[in-house]
Amino acid sequence: PNLNPNPNPNPSPRLGPGLGFGLRLGSGSGSDGAPLPSVAEPSPANDYHAEWVSVLDSSLRELTGRNLLDRPSGEALDAAAVYAEDDIVVLSHALIPAPDPDVGPMFNYGNAAGRNLFEVDWPTLVGLPSRRSAELGERAERERLLNTVEAQGYIDDYRGIRISSTGRRFWIQQAVVWNVIDDSGRVLGQAATFKASEVERIVEGREEEEGETEAARRVRENFQLMCYSFSANHGCATAALSLASTRFGVGLGGLSSGVLYIFYVLSALTLAGPAVNRLGSRNALAASLGLYCAYVAEFAASSTVSAGNEAALLLLGSALGGLAAGTLWVAEGAYYGAAAEQYRSAAGLAVGAGAENRLRGIFARSFLGGEVLIKLLTSGLIAVAGDSVAFLALFGLSLASAAAAWAIEPIEPSGAAGAQQGVGLGELAGALTLDWRSYILLPWNVAFGLGVAFLQLNVNAALAASSAFGPAAVGVAGTIAITTAATASEPMASSEVFWQPLAAGVLGYLALGLGFGFGEPQDSGLWVAVAPVFVAWGLSRSAWEGPFKAFFAELYGGDVSRAFPVTIVQSGLASAVGFLGFPYLSMQANPNPNP
Image (cartoon, rainbow, N blue to C red; front, side, top):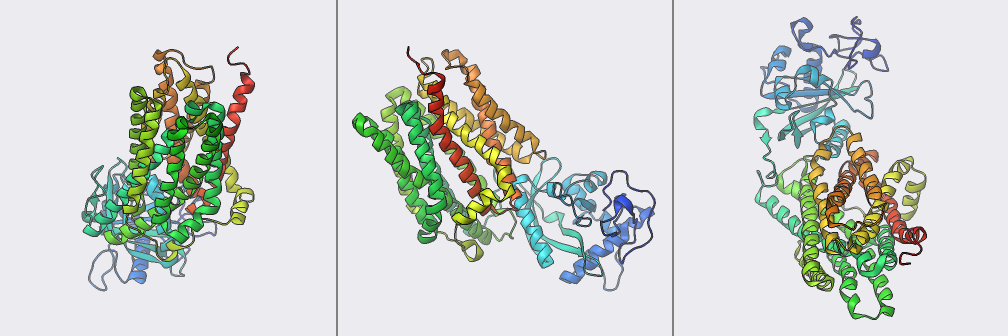
């Protein structure tokens, strides 16, 4: 369509079959001179864009054998009736000229049913990138759907989540999505039609249960069990990690955390794929959770060993914990993919209908909620009974959650989804050094990785060492960050302007460094100053986990098997460098802390 806000008002002569209405050249034509439909609102003056509507109708009939609107055989299509139709939604976007890759295709037609459903008027619709009809978290699935349509010609059973201009979310049902083609077979755009009366409004917080089959419910509940087991075990490990500098000092605590991250990266690159492929995702996940307990065990056992053996025990536990963590996340990703496939089949959802994002939402809530509860539990136990009791409780909980993982039903992907996990080292080396996209990811991954190390090591040590705060404050401060991240995740995910979450992330990094760059807080009244620092870090974590990772995936065309290994290496090694280097920098800056 001619999407120039100031199009050439002079119409061109007819240049192609089926595209003679409101044709314009210049800025309103394709790079190959193809005619484009006007964006003027359909009316008697432009015959309700009858020729474009006719192309939609003829393309649909050629591909599927059905008409755009039901009508007697041989009767001409009434473009005015299509435009005024209030139940059968008709929407289209154009692919000629090639859309700006940063914007994507824009709507060039929408009838009354479509505009009412998405709560927009005609001028708003025709200037709107069609990707904005879906939430940020749904767009990768939507993009895969459109790529499938472009390759196959059409899909006639699509079900997916969409969102209106006012934020109302709904399921569209039995949608037909097809390529709009001219008489020569050239793809001009894509269109969709479905019944507005069959749309299911989503009640927030209940979308998992609405309309679920019994088989789908069982898959979801089994997946939730995996989420609870994973979140409890991982929460115990991260609670211990946040107290490493408090328990062992900044030097030894930093060394152990650096070893943890080094082995995490090595495991993710070398051990995780073969382990998941040989054992299966459930078994690899459960075994990794069991091995992860070794990291928590070193904290619980440290008070019972001599000072000479403490370092050896700590480094051994960190190495084992790193091997577990690298495999754990790959196994979780494989299990999640298999569960989403099974849930989609059990629920009768089409590919791209949001099953993946539905389960990912369940995981995110469990993951963040578990981390908050365990950090608060740890802080409470430290305040009441001391850190030794707290670490013993964390170790016991981690063992129980690892044992519970064996009750999870094994689910393995089929077909293409069951391919080997991970990428080879040679392939990864090329992705890190030769692929220009890795250099775009590098500053954000390094910033996040160093931020994690600085928070866990220097900031937490400063809080714990302060006479006004103490070790119990570490869990409380961490809870502030996690709660902020969880609260900010939805508005950040729905942001249409990438610089907003980007700015939030950058400000979080800056606040973290500046907030603790001037010495330790010595007054408990300084919670008013400390809390905003952790709020800012929560914003940066939310930006990282949501828009940043979505951007990474989109940058790699939705191929997370390429994007996320690069992210693991870059951010993981940055954290390792931070954990190993920050203690040295601290000693250089303050060589005589106790003169």
